[in-house]
Length: 199
Image (tube, rainbow, N blue to C red; front, side, top):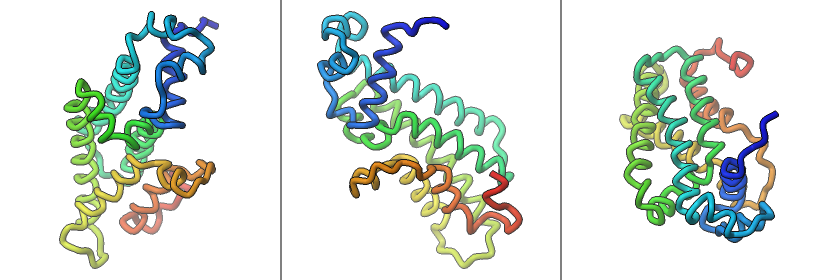
């Protein structure tokens, strides 16, 4: 098995710490201490925390962009495809949940990624709204005029704030599936024959 390079290990540990504590609560000294290396060794690989955040964001951006590009190239409103779409989007956002939880703060602290992050999340929102529009338009439920927008708002709020309720109520149980939360929002718009066993 190939040995993990120090640079990659720094990024992996930083991601864990940022997700657990919040990016704003972790310094380069904290990161070096967690890895049991000197701050100088860390600085050899990354010239400060901004470089670490930018590298992690680049990974996040590439992964989520790939999903959005795939959907844009071949959108499908089959119910299983929609659930699969939210499954892979959920995976990326959960893996980098510090970005969703601290979107505004990260945008303010790291201007280099602000416009990219805004465009990426705007793209995500528009795709979710497109899906929501399709689902609500074929529903027999009595819905408000802005149902697609409201459904999209709720979905993206859950996606970006995964784990925030656990922090507020001081509950360390993270077993609740992000996909299950999205599924429950979509459930009224899915056909009766599609059940959680089909996911």
